[in-house]
Amino acid sequence: MAQVELIMPKMGESVAEATITNWLKEVGDTIEADEAVVEIATDKVDSEVPSTSEGVLLKKLFNDGDVVQVGQAIAIIGSEGDTAEPVAASAPAAEPTPVAEVAAAPAAVPASTEKITTASSNKFFSPLVKSIAEKEGISVAELEAINGTGAEGRVTKKDILNYLPNRSNGQAAAQPAVTSTPAPTAAPQAEKPAAAPVKKANVPVMEGDEIIEMDRMRKLISEHMVMSKHTSPHVTSYVEADVTNIVMWRNKVKDKFLKQENEKITFTPIFMEAIVKAIKDFPMINVSVDGDNIIKRKNINLGMATALPSGNLIVPVIKNADQLNLVGITKQVNGLANKARNNKLAPDDIQGGTYTVTNVGTFGNVMGTPIINQPQVAILALGAIRKIPAVIETPQGDAIAIRHKMFLSHAYDHRVVDGALGGMFVRRVADYLEEFDVNREI
Image (tube, rainbow, N blue to C red; front, side):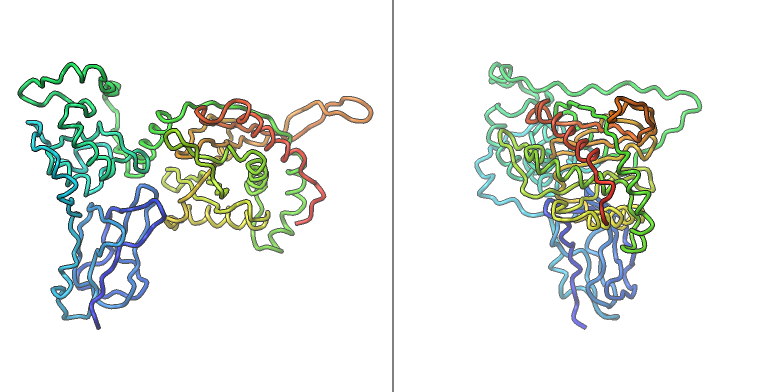
């Protein structure tokens, strides 16, 4: 058979690369079509790369821990007894830096040029950016100081190339004093000092303590949450909603729903339906911020924060939720939750969210202060449903009755969502929940 290159697949519109985490096959192993060959990880999700054809693994083009660009070959598959030489030339290397783009950058470099590696920085840099940094003598600390315009603030090729001319003119973001001779432009630099590095708390380790290293996903979650709090000034509004009608309706139809649709009906899709309606009423809650521009999203893609078996958190996305009825939303909620529990989420399952919902009531919490899932501008936490005594209005006057109630906690980005919009939105969600028709048909 002809030799075939196994290509790093496309994994969503914003995912440009992935890290090889574990080879499931060794050189010489027989591979069936669609059989998983290697495990990969992006900054979003872990997944497997299946073989596009049957054959024998002739050669691995990358090792565990290597970062690979989407579209690059990662292995060669052929027949037993073949060698990989005929297509070895396709093995990818770091993308060369166009000479014309950096030729104008002077050769002056700092005296200290620590090699840029994944282990030498807490921030992620693509192989191309690291290659340019090493070529230009940019230290780890200096690279970390560059303002990135890529996804989640990553430094892109354009960022680092734009940085180089300013660096040579003494106008770049301030960096540790690593040069051996004083720069004559120190005074202009003082006019725009760099932000002081964030001080880390001194954490003593006491007798009997256990040190547990964060896994890769926990590190990513940690970085994403800190970035969100630094990016968005968070404000949270709270509303209590009476969901007695919803509880009564679900108890009445759940058996029929399961028999008719082969799906369990939970409260989550009912809440999602109300949230979609409120987003359509207040579309400026379904936006993102890009510098001084507001991007108003056309699609309503609801993220649903989901706990993984490991205890980590992931946010699969219900795409075009406004185009689904309650049955459709239920199928999406159950399907994505099952995939998350079984570690079967594909990269595309967690891409493109425009608004996120987290159900803190699952853990018995009555309310929460959720952190915005960037680059979105709002997130809604659903509290536990509780039976409580409440005052209700009747034709005969006020009365005390047992009602099912819950708190909605709406956190939003005060750069673009003011209290009026944030508060009216969550109030509208509560209105839709309270007005739920207890006689509704499935």
